[in-house]
Image (cartoon, rainbow, N blue to C red):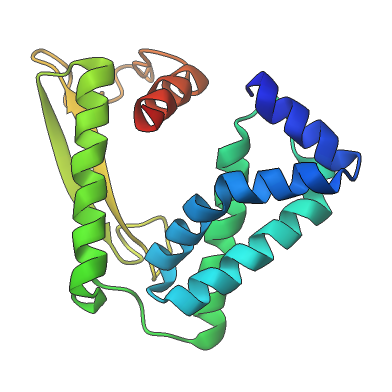
Length: 185
């Protein structure tokens, strides 16, 4: 966790209202955007974003500052968005359910992810695809996401397990920092 985020969380824990406003201002757009992508509704996204920041305020004392703060925050937001869909018993999100605008936005994020990964890792190619639905998406009916895997000549096709050993080229937190900086640039 970066020093500025660490300090902001510390100030929020001390009930500093200005710090909490800064935290909301910093992440509100990203949280709302994530919620909109999951729910498909601007109104639902606004509701999820509001509830996310209420939950953050109530449970910030449980946050582990050794972990990336945005990951913790976005997990809360995505869980709330999925819970909202379940409560309203909407049918599962499928590619055909997305508006043209939502599909264009997801496509732009795919393009952006490839640009960032190309700049950060300099791969020779990519595997890019979409997972749709419960079977393809970690048991969540409402699941829809793009995935992008950088590839190099000679790599071992999604790094299969050999003799119960997996290839890990760098620590997940190091990868997070490199990619996050790429998206912020």
